[in-house]
Length: 186
Image (cartoon, rainbow, N blue to C red; front, side, top):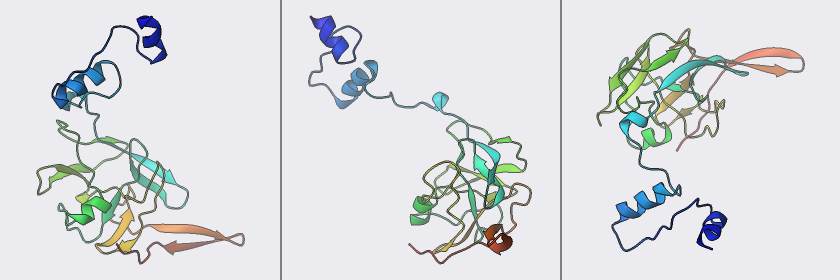
């Protein structure tokens, strides 16, 4: 009877009983039966890796290995980030995974790091600090070529990291090239 009930509830054996133990004990018990993932450890982290991706609108762009588009802030001086506080919530910095000594680049050169005020190491390309954008909700999106409260943000062309990108718009069979940007504010 107990084995049948366990199979019905997705458990493959044994009887798990939770008593009034500390929260950590309940997490460990839940992890043991597969209800929650155990806490991540430095050795279990994946490396921060960048690659060259392609956008139909922006051409070659820099992306994380998972396809998320990365951006740069034109207000950042070389090898420094001025985006902190609320800015870093909207534009999370691309940082190294815990214990990762250097960023990994697949077809990307010029990668380095800077140390942020909180001690994390932010990834750079040719001295340009890299960020993600909260407005991109899935891999391949590039919604962050905007001007906002913190300045102008651009996708990063791996061949020319400081270049202003241009978008090609198809209109009436012709092609017109325009610079990106909008007046988004937070």
